[in-house]
Length: 193
Image (cartoon, rainbow, N blue to C red; front, side):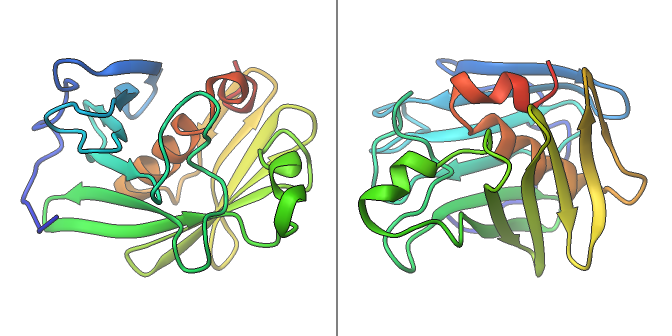
Protein backbone atom coordinates (compact mmCIF):
# COMPACT_ATOMS: atom_id res chain seq x y z
CA UNK A 1 0.00 0.00 0.00
CA UNK A 2 1.63 3.20 -1.12
CA UNK A 3 1.55 6.57 0.60
CA UNK A 4 -1.71 8.41 0.17
CA UNK A 5 -2.36 11.94 1.33
CA UNK A 6 -5.46 12.17 3.50
CA UNK A 7 -7.01 14.75 5.73
CA UNK A 8 -8.79 13.90 8.94
CA UNK A 9 -12.17 14.51 7.29
CA UNK A 10 -11.58 12.35 4.18
CA UNK A 11 -12.65 9.19 6.01
CA UNK A 12 -15.23 10.43 8.50
CA UNK A 13 -17.69 7.75 7.35
CA UNK A 14 -16.86 4.05 6.98
CA UNK A 15 -17.00 2.45 3.52
CA UNK A 16 -20.29 0.83 2.50
CA UNK A 17 -20.44 -2.75 3.75
CA UNK A 18 -18.47 -2.10 6.95
CA UNK A 19 -19.45 -4.28 9.90
CA UNK A 20 -19.31 -1.84 12.82
CA UNK A 21 -17.99 -3.43 16.00
CA UNK A 22 -17.73 -0.37 18.24
CA UNK A 23 -18.63 3.32 18.05
CA UNK A 24 -17.48 6.05 20.40
CA UNK A 25 -18.11 9.72 20.89
CA UNK A 26 -14.97 11.00 22.57
CA UNK A 27 -14.43 14.48 23.90
CA UNK A 28 -11.69 16.01 21.80
CA UNK A 29 -11.94 13.34 19.09
CA UNK A 30 -15.60 13.48 18.05
CA UNK A 31 -17.40 10.51 16.52
CA UNK A 32 -15.21 7.44 15.96
CA UNK A 33 -16.15 4.08 14.42
CA UNK A 34 -14.17 0.84 14.54
CA UNK A 35 -15.26 -1.95 12.26
CA UNK A 36 -14.44 -4.77 9.88
CA UNK A 37 -14.24 -4.99 6.10
CA UNK A 38 -14.92 -8.71 5.63
CA UNK A 39 -13.17 -11.08 3.26
CA UNK A 40 -14.02 -10.31 -0.35
CA UNK A 41 -15.05 -6.70 0.35
CA UNK A 42 -13.73 -4.50 -2.51
CA UNK A 43 -11.61 -2.52 -0.03
CA UNK A 44 -10.97 -5.38 2.42
CA UNK A 45 -8.80 -7.67 0.34
CA UNK A 46 -8.65 -11.45 0.41
CA UNK A 47 -8.46 -11.70 4.22
CA UNK A 48 -10.34 -8.54 5.18
CA UNK A 49 -9.11 -5.88 7.58
CA UNK A 50 -10.09 -3.91 10.67
CA UNK A 51 -10.62 -0.18 10.12
CA UNK A 52 -10.98 2.99 12.16
CA UNK A 53 -12.48 6.24 10.92
CA UNK A 54 -13.97 9.33 12.45
CA UNK A 55 -14.27 13.08 12.62
CA UNK A 56 -10.94 13.94 14.22
CA UNK A 57 -8.79 10.83 13.88
CA UNK A 58 -6.56 9.71 11.05
CA UNK A 59 -8.04 6.81 9.11
CA UNK A 60 -6.37 3.57 10.21
CA UNK A 61 -6.42 -0.06 9.14
CA UNK A 62 -5.17 -3.30 10.66
CA UNK A 63 -4.33 -6.26 8.44
CA UNK A 64 -3.97 -9.85 9.70
CA UNK A 65 -0.83 -11.94 9.42
CA UNK A 66 -2.19 -14.61 7.04
CA UNK A 67 -5.13 -15.48 9.23
CA UNK A 68 -8.83 -15.19 8.73
CA UNK A 69 -10.60 -12.45 10.67
CA UNK A 70 -13.43 -13.76 12.79
CA UNK A 71 -14.79 -13.51 16.32
CA UNK A 72 -12.55 -16.44 17.24
CA UNK A 73 -9.41 -15.18 15.48
CA UNK A 74 -8.15 -12.21 17.46
CA UNK A 75 -5.95 -9.88 15.41
CA UNK A 76 -4.00 -8.87 18.49
CA UNK A 77 -2.22 -12.12 19.13
CA UNK A 78 1.19 -13.47 18.17
CA UNK A 79 1.82 -14.73 14.69
CA UNK A 80 4.77 -16.63 13.29
CA UNK A 81 8.15 -15.06 14.13
CA UNK A 82 8.55 -11.86 12.18
CA UNK A 83 4.91 -11.90 10.99
CA UNK A 84 2.85 -9.75 13.40
CA UNK A 85 -0.37 -7.99 12.39
CA UNK A 86 0.24 -4.91 10.24
CA UNK A 87 -1.22 -1.50 11.09
CA UNK A 88 -1.51 1.41 8.63
CA UNK A 89 -2.43 4.97 9.61
CA UNK A 90 -3.15 7.41 6.81
CA UNK A 91 -1.81 10.74 8.04
CA UNK A 92 -1.67 13.98 6.00
CA UNK A 93 1.96 13.34 4.98
CA UNK A 94 1.34 9.76 3.78
CA UNK A 95 0.80 6.29 5.22
CA UNK A 96 2.49 5.29 8.49
CA UNK A 97 2.95 1.51 8.61
CA UNK A 98 3.65 -0.42 11.79
CA UNK A 99 3.20 -3.74 13.54
CA UNK A 100 1.16 -5.14 16.42
CA UNK A 101 2.26 -8.14 18.47
CA UNK A 102 2.23 -9.58 21.97
CA UNK A 103 5.81 -10.26 23.05
CA UNK A 104 6.45 -12.50 26.00
CA UNK A 105 3.54 -14.88 25.55
CA UNK A 106 4.35 -18.55 26.12
CA UNK A 107 5.21 -20.42 22.93
CA UNK A 108 3.34 -23.36 21.52
CA UNK A 109 -0.05 -24.59 22.58
CA UNK A 110 -0.24 -22.43 25.74
CA UNK A 111 -0.26 -19.20 23.74
CA UNK A 112 -3.98 -19.32 22.91
CA UNK A 113 -4.88 -19.90 26.55
CA UNK A 114 -3.25 -16.66 27.63
CA UNK A 115 -4.02 -14.36 24.70
CA UNK A 116 -5.99 -11.24 25.55
CA UNK A 117 -5.87 -8.17 27.72
CA UNK A 118 -8.36 -9.30 30.34
CA UNK A 119 -5.58 -10.87 32.39
CA UNK A 120 -3.40 -8.40 34.26
CA UNK A 121 -0.13 -9.80 32.93
CA UNK A 122 -1.02 -9.42 29.25
CA UNK A 123 0.30 -6.60 27.10
CA UNK A 124 0.24 -5.63 23.46
CA UNK A 125 3.10 -3.84 21.69
CA UNK A 126 2.48 -1.53 18.74
CA UNK A 127 5.35 -0.14 16.68
CA UNK A 128 4.71 2.58 14.06
CA UNK A 129 6.25 5.84 12.90
CA UNK A 130 9.31 5.44 15.10
CA UNK A 131 7.18 5.07 18.24
CA UNK A 132 6.38 2.13 20.50
CA UNK A 133 3.14 1.86 22.46
CA UNK A 134 2.40 -0.65 25.22
CA UNK A 135 -1.26 -1.56 25.78
CA UNK A 136 -1.57 -3.18 29.22
CA UNK A 137 -4.47 -4.43 31.25
CA UNK A 138 -4.92 -2.69 34.58
CA UNK A 139 -6.97 -4.06 37.46
CA UNK A 140 -10.03 -6.10 36.48
CA UNK A 141 -11.37 -4.28 33.42
CA UNK A 142 -9.07 -1.30 32.87
CA UNK A 143 -6.41 -0.52 30.31
CA UNK A 144 -3.39 1.77 30.21
CA UNK A 145 -1.50 2.74 27.08
CA UNK A 146 1.96 4.22 27.37
CA UNK A 147 4.25 5.47 24.63
CA UNK A 148 7.98 5.04 25.05
CA UNK A 149 9.59 6.47 27.09
CA UNK A 150 6.81 6.00 29.66
CA UNK A 151 4.38 8.68 28.46
CA UNK A 152 0.77 7.85 29.41
CA UNK A 153 -1.48 8.46 26.40
CA UNK A 154 -4.69 6.59 27.34
CA UNK A 155 -6.23 5.09 30.46
CA UNK A 156 -9.53 3.93 31.87
CA UNK A 157 -10.82 4.27 35.43
CA UNK A 158 -14.11 2.57 36.07
CA UNK A 159 -16.50 3.84 33.41
CA UNK A 160 -14.28 6.79 32.50
CA UNK A 161 -11.72 6.68 29.68
CA UNK A 162 -9.42 9.52 28.66
CA UNK A 163 -6.45 10.38 26.52
CA UNK A 164 -3.47 12.01 28.21
CA UNK A 165 -2.44 15.58 27.43
CA UNK A 166 0.54 14.28 25.43
CA UNK A 167 -1.65 12.27 23.00
CA UNK A 168 -1.61 13.43 19.39
CA UNK A 169 -3.63 12.21 16.35
CA UNK A 170 -1.23 9.31 15.71
CA UNK A 171 -1.59 8.18 19.35
CA UNK A 172 -5.40 8.42 19.15
CA UNK A 173 -5.59 6.53 15.85
CA UNK A 174 -3.23 3.72 16.90
CA UNK A 175 -4.75 3.26 20.36
CA UNK A 176 -8.38 3.21 19.21
CA UNK A 177 -7.71 0.88 16.29
CA UNK A 178 -5.80 -1.53 18.52
CA UNK A 179 -8.56 -1.53 21.14
CA UNK A 180 -11.29 -1.88 18.49
CA UNK A 181 -9.47 -4.93 17.06
CA UNK A 182 -9.69 -6.86 20.31
CA UNK A 183 -12.53 -9.43 20.05
CA UNK A 184 -15.99 -8.12 20.85
CA UNK A 185 -16.16 -10.34 23.92
CA UNK A 186 -13.29 -8.37 25.42
CA UNK A 187 -13.31 -4.80 24.08
CA UNK A 188 -16.30 -3.47 26.01
CA UNK A 189 -14.87 -3.92 29.53
CA UNK A 190 -11.40 -2.92 28.34
CA UNK A 191 -12.71 0.37 26.94
CA UNK A 192 -14.38 1.14 30.24
CA UNK A 193 -18.01 0.56 29.20
